[in-house]
Structures are given as structure tokens and as C-alpha cells.
Image (cartoon, rainbow, N blue to C red; front, side, top):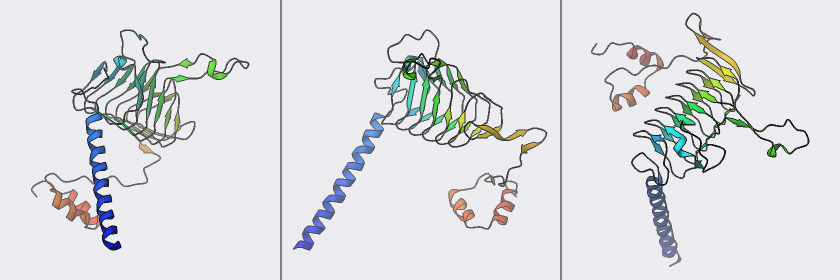
Length: 254
């Protein structure tokens, strides 16, 4: 008899677990924000196929937030324009996010003055971007009560911003830049570079003449030949590296 009771309890527990998971999945789908289903949010613009995952982080000043198409905004991402809600920030957008941008879970983009994120940028989780910093000019006044300094931030197209990176006011990041995890970026970062550290410094850079300097230590990814099916990909995964490289060099139809 006790065995039957334990079996019933186990079955009931699995049923409850499945119901909770299914219910939460429904809440996530229903609570996500899109152009067609913006909920309470009224962004200045939001492009097609863009989705803000539920649960949302803090979002305010949305009339001055413009988000492009095919963007993915992860759970608990904060997007703000202005120092506080319900301010009139004028006719121009404050926070501009391009097409195809991915903002990882728990990231913050704080645009008290202009912040621009170019298209096809990918952010890892918990990235912090801000155009505002506390000032501490007066040694006798609490820092939190002193008027902050604001400087525009620009992140160029095609960048990868690693987990936990911090982008400070005034940062001007070029095109196709890698910001290492945990880096703290300020100032100007040139195109096609890799920065790391706190404060971040250029540790690798590409130029048309010299290529990557210092040279990359890892081999280039092997491209997938045209017309390869999912079953063939599984088979390729079991082949040795030399065979995969030889197949990748084959012309379609050869």
C-alpha cells in the first residue's frame, strides 16, 4: 500500500510540474512584446519580427526609443530614455537600436542622452551601457546628490559585446569590434579591433595590409558546403578534421 501511495504522489508531482512549465511557457509567449502586440509600451518605433522577451526589465521613455526589425531583446533587459519617466525629451529619438540586434538577458541600456547601437550587434548577458555617470567635483557633497555628466554613446554595426561588459559615457565603438567579457570601455575604439580589460585596451586589430595583428591563434571556421542536409551535417560531425576540410573545398556538384 505505501508503494502505491508513493507511485501516485510521484505521478501527481510530475503532472503538476508539467502544468507549471506549460503555464509559464504560455505566460512568456503572451507577455512578450512585438510591433503587433506592444501591450502598454508605445515605442517611437519597433520593427517587424522584433520581440522583447517576458519578463521585461525596466522600460520607460519608450516614445524616444526606436528599435529596428528582427531584434531579440532577452528577459529582464532594461531600456530607458531620459533620467526618469514622464519627461518630455523633445522631437528626436534618444535610444536608437538598429536591425538584427540581440540584447542578452539582464542587460541594461541607459540612455539619458543619445545612445546608438548599430545593426547586427550581439550582446552577451548582463552588459551595461550608459550615457550617464556620477560626478564628484564637490568633495563636501554626497556623490549621489551631484548633477551627473552625460555624453553620447555609439556602438558601430556588427559588434560583439561580451558578457558583463560595461560601456561608459562617451564611448565611440567602431564597426565589427569585439569587446571581451568584463571589459570596461571608454573613449574611441577603432574598427575591426578586439578590446579587453578595465579600462579596455586594444589587444588585437585587423588592417587590410597586415590582417590580424597579433595573428589569430585559432583556425578559421570551416564553411558548410551549399546544399548540405541536416542528416549530412550529422554525418560530417563524425568525420575527421582533414576529411571535413577536403569536403568544404569541393565545388557544388563536383
